[in-house]
Each structure stands twice: as C-alpha cells, then as structure tokens.
Length: 416
Image (cartoon, rainbow, N blue to C red):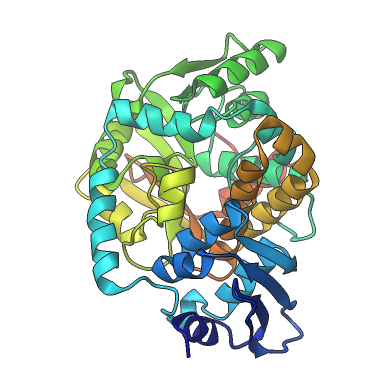
C-alpha cells in the first residue's frame, strides 16, 4: 500500500472520501455516515507528495494552486470530514507532522514570534491592510472581525455581533464618565458602541493604517469624534490611565515573549480601581505551534496561546483575574457565516485579487471553522482588576447590564 493510501485510510474512518490520483488510480476511504457528506477530490501531480510532507500546508497550497480539485463537496466539507475523524478530545494524532519536522517547526516558530514593535506593524499590515472592500463582503455591517456571541445558534450574524458587544460591555461594568482604552480597535465598532451605549470617552489604538482611516471616518460620521478618538500607536508606547481597558482579537498578535510586557502595560494603564477585559482565541490544551499555512499566508507572527501561557504572562503583576469564560462553539458559528458570505462573493473577491487568493481565503476560513468545531481552539474572555473590590461580589451584574444594553427589561443598579 502506498504511503498516501495509508494516510487516508488512517485519516478517514467515518464518512466517505474518494481520491482520484494523478496516475488515474482511484482510492475509496471510510464508510457511509449520515452525519458526513461524501467528498470526492482529484489530486494532480505533486499534490499527494505535498500532503504527505505537511498535511495542512500541502493541502492548502495544492488547493490554492488548483492541484487539489474538489469534484464532490467543497473545501469545508473535505476539512470537516478529515477533522471529524480526528477530533481534539479524542487525542488523535494522524495529522501531526513527524517528530523531527515538528521540532524544527517549533524552533522556527519560536524565533518568528518574537514580535518587536517594527515587526508587529508589518505583521498587522499583512492581514488587516487588505482592501476594506474584501472585509465588507463577508463581515457584518459593523465590521466586527472577531468571534460573535450566539445566544441562539439560529441568530443572524448581525444579531450575534451586537450581542457580543453587549456581553463585553456588561463585563466591563461601565459607569458614567469613565475613560476606556480599546487596544486593537479594528474598524472602530466596539469603541463607538461603548460610547453610544454608556457615554464613555474611548481611545482606540491600532497598528493598521487602513483600519485607522475607517475608524476615524466612522467617528466623524457618528458625531462622536470628540469623545471617541483613534490613534496609530503600539500599546507599548501609550501613556496615561484608563478606568477600563478592552482588547478584542488583538492578544493573538502579541507574541508569547511579550505576554508579561502586555500585562504589565495593562496594569500600568489602569486606574487603581480599573478593570480590563481581554477577548482572545486560545488553545484548549497546552502550548503549541502555529501551523505553517497560517504563519505563511494569514497571520505572520501570530500565535494562539494556551491558558497556561496567559497565566504565566499576568502572574506577579498584582492583578486579580476576576472572571474567565470559555466560548467553545461561538467562533465556529461566526466563521460559518463568514465562509458562506465569502463563497457568495466569489466573483467580487476574484475581481479584487485573483482566483488563487479566493481559494486561499476559503481554505483559511474553512480551516478555522473546523479548528473550533473539531479541533482544540476556543475563545477566552478574561477579566482582570487591580483592586479586589472593584467589581460586584457575584456575576449577576453581567446578565443585568447585558439585558439593559440589549434593550430587555432588567433591574437598574445603584452606582452609589
């Protein structure tokens, strides 16, 4: 049996996969499963060898280059079939690279994720300075490029993103007159929401010049430019103090070597009664390595942290971790919306870039979906405070504030 046959035989037990190889040979793998749609693909010359060398990167580049052609199902169906058979909680390892290659990749990755300020700006620009037209095609109307919050899996993307902002704002326990810092503010949606809902004065900072332009334009259009400001600055260079700090989807770009720097800066920027809320993708298990596809094409310098690594970052900073929430499937649901919108906008994306970019983007989103659906990725919402009495004794205030922000009936709190 050829190595590629052994690979697919081990990788696919549930569900059906048909592979037509470059030499005309046909391989059928797995068994019918009502929960998994059959997938058929054709591998052109070189694709099988690339997949054996590095399953994720080899499959991605073969798909991008047209050497892996889906004849039944799409790239999401293929990746879902493979990962459903190798779910994280089942401790499967069939897709892991060989030990020596994994070690070499880990060493290169650790060197690459030293995220100095100049490199951090280049890394951000690689992804976030893509055309704003691209993001408008698949994101919600508020351009929220992070995990939404689904109070009901059937909710629209717009509703889930609005609920995400309410959920985070509630955890911040905002009060009139507070100053808020938004680290990694994206296109400004969270900052504008916090000001609109609470009257807070907000400073949003970013390293993306394209996002900065859009955020400032939105603040002007909303008549909030005096109360909601946006600056192009690295968090490490910021001074002042804030009552609240929020950071959504930025911590993944900090780099493990700078976790302690990040949390020390957060503490420095908080008032003595200050509260911070960090929303980040995280690993359900221990420390790991960013896969080669993501490092090369999507988020150079990015790293998904394990909770252990985050804890090492804030230990000794004299801050209380006051709340931890693990969102397990919310990002999979979010990404499914983004994927469907991307597929629907194929012609527009190809016109903006080209066919190869479109396939790369589909692989990126599909890979992320299955990483949350079947893999070891989750989202963490981590709340910190400098003072032990800065927040109420129980979590009841979160639900109460969230209901008010969403326009539902909830008892008012006495801030006296």
